[in-house]
Image (cartoon, rainbow, N blue to C red; front, side, top):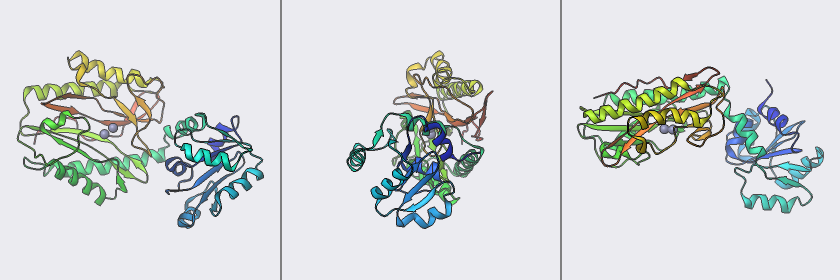
Length: 356
Ligand code: ZN
Ligand code: ZN
């Protein structure tokens, strides 16, 4: 298969003479090189990575599909490459290039046209959204770290443990087992706090009869995982059981329906209607899902206004919830690799209500 840079060049040739990429995530996606600085120039014939002294040795080791050039005087080096490839129209990333950076480019290259529409950003999203088997492998490895951490936690989770202790337990376990990072700041909430979908862990301790909601993930080789489980310490009330089962039914309905060609809006609607029919329509105030990859939130989106179609190889979360302020909340989150006829669920952890 052609390289990511070649595929990007092919999708941009009608639009520009060169694509200029400076976004950290996009640069890593295209070259395989993780760094906090660097410039990719992608011409139809050849791509280049200009990168400074701190990274150049590693870049020469890992980058296969671009010529690695040590950055000395960036603008002069860029000018030489624009000349060499006779490039006059340069596409930039509308999604991440700052106005300050654009102004500097326009000042340094007054004869050059910088194309600031969304074409390059959309082309990058289109590439990044469809995961290769290798990328799925990394996402699965990240998910395994998260599930192992939850398994270990449930052996010790008890009344009296604080939200911060729960979060720290999960974080420490994932990092010790080899996570390069956490996907995001771990959410661990107990009791009435569980009604806040993105609450922050506090000193509050688990009481008998509380729900404990945990939303967390690990990063492996740049790729994120994302899962939420809600468990009960002690015995739940009938209402807690009923809400849990409703969320689970909503999620299972969406998981059973998801497949390539469906819109994010349609997928969201399937889960949302199950919750609405149970009388909790106002208590599900966020989107059903989001893409996961080199970023924890990326395309595609499953929300009430997501018109774009889901496709094979897209990884998307399915995370319905019901939140009853002052009482409790439940969210259950898996993420799936979409296929032509359905999906592969990347989350293996049980969803039966666990009562400890
Ligand atoms: Zn999550
Ligand atoms: Zn999520």
